[in-house]
Length: 396
Image (cartoon, rainbow, N blue to C red; front, side, top):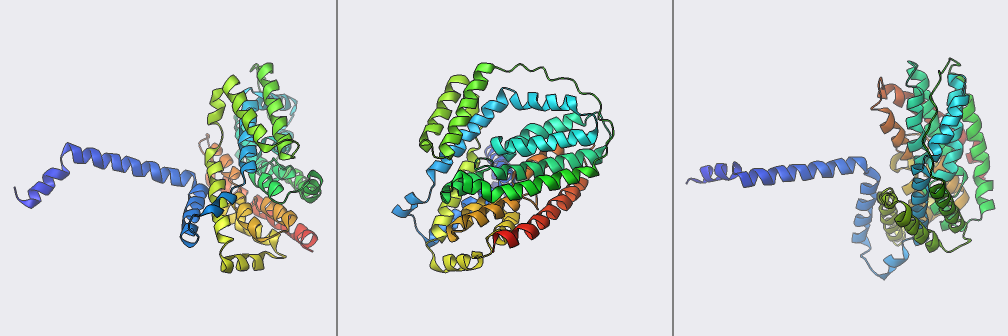
């Protein structure tokens, strides 16, 4: 058989077609994963790239902050447990009953996101309350008010979460990295958080006072036994974050609670986020051992921590920005403020912002372009305002 015919026969054989289909499917899954987890992919590639400059050695063992990883894992399990028993949904529906108009409803939801994110993290607050917002507006044709409410909820979750060490991953990391006390953390973030809440309430004036209609009451029964267990677990996590107990206790308690009461909770932890932290620990550890890079980053950061960290967050998000820059400055307070303020701006400045967008896009009458316009206007406006106010105060 001539070579050309053999090649044609090979390419049309069942085995070749099966192999080609498998390869195509594998690549499709890989590309989909890269699109859904861009920060992890960047962190992984950055870590691998620095390994060529600093080959793996015994020093790598000192890179990872295991207390942060353990506390973050335990908090994920505790919050997933509280959400699984329906606590947050019931609280929200109670608020919905008391809302008389759209503006008041929006304010309720925004305030709930702001304060709940301090305890359950910004991404969990949005996963919990944005779907309820979509449900609450399902009986109205006021798309502008729906978009404004979701955009302001997203900003509220990102800004409210800055107020506690366990409100978001970057806070947890920086709180441990700079060995802050609770009072140091609060005095740093309280002025920014208070100003942010005032801004959010003023922005709700754009939402009309039209009737929001009546919503049916939520009747999901809560398991009080499991509720108590998850509340206790959450308190154990807080105790570990505040260094009242060893960090490993909260991780062990989380695993035991999940195995006894709901093994599915172990699947709810964001392991990709944990791996992202590991990759950035390796990346930061390696570049800190490269003299030229260390000197350059230290030079541009000194006295400019808020500006540099907030701007870097726009491109790589505030969690990796916090991990990356923490190796080059000892001004933990300014860096803490910068990465939290930097959660405003682009949709990827805080990865939690993408949650709201993904939840909104599939809904009926969704207008993604309009959403992004309002998102950009509000986020960049608040970013500019907070930087203008707090950079002169905190970077003196």
